[in-house]
Image 1 (cartoon, one colour):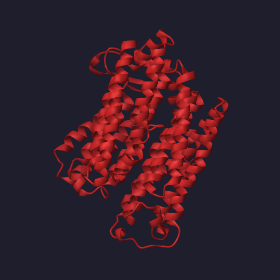
Image 2 (cartoon, one colour):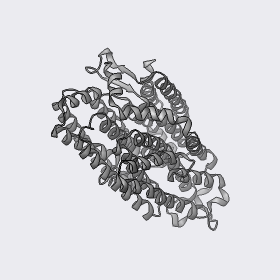
Image 3 (cartoon, one colour):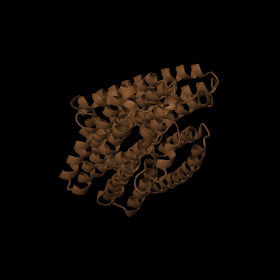
Image 4 (cartoon, one colour):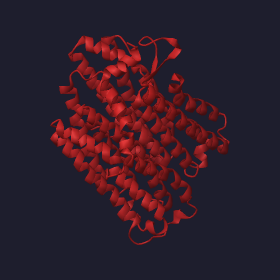
Length: 493
């Protein structure tokens, strides 16, 4: 059953390679991509179920046992993130059939999406810090293509900035790994934790921890390293925005969560306090952007930044409850951001603009779209009993219990501003006098609405079923709160 670990990586890899040979046959690409992404959901579900029943699963590549070989590790956190990624990928692929355009489909769109999934799922699954870098690069190279595919002026302009920032962060990543290896003499993440424990509280470990925070902070868009994100995520079409907004920054957030709970916890008074300060500033910066803009793309993009801050605040508190809340909120945010990006993609397809001042009255002709957006907006803001409520409540409560009053209050108040920012879209865009839009003729709204409606339904069920899913999320948080569980499973001690 350990072979289940590699399936979420292997399925999109094989699919991407196969699709390269069928780039001109759009219909075949669509069918193969849909079947592959649905197979990914099945494989990830089986993996999550197996991990829940049998504990952390490991796979030593080429039969070299840890810590000497490359090890894939699937604990409950990894399995849940891979499952969420698979669901979002399926929704985005189905949505792409009627939105991305045949020209993009003929130029390797579906193969590159699958290679992106290889990088994302690999980053969530690897137990080796250098292979985390490798999967990051697979993910980033795919994102470069998806960002520039279509060749519009804004895409070309933003791709230069995006590539430059990520080349610098990748160079810093290699430097950080080299420094860490020079101190601990291993790349296996479980073994790194053991070696750091043996070394004690050395100053150099704290320096390396801050360097990793810079690296992953650039990729995860924390304050003040988020400057590249609003422009870069604004440029591509809706399904690509959904993949970027739901997955790419969350890989950075996951990497901070994993490293700061597994081996950079010995000087928590400094490292986690720094992380907490940056998380609070990230929330504030995101909120300001979300309420300042009247562009529906920018509003949702800045809400990505808010969510990054909320999740990392929960990680910085580093208690069982705060980590449980952070995981609850991480899965919720991946799902609901994908839904919202796909929904605003439909709005733009109908109206031909993302300027909120030029949109009104959509609810008259598109009530299903309007009410789906309304539910998704409430879920994003954490209104009970929808998916964002439970995680944020646990983060706020644990923050107050840990004495981080300002941070907990900031997280709490962010819900009001997030609600205001997305309700602004609903009130201005869907209420008001009905308008006629030149672009709405022939817009396949019913088809396009299926994918975000599926994700929104998932948000409702995730919120209502909090009690049922709590043991699963708690199991994921327990591994973060008690690193020895992860270490024992990987090193088989």
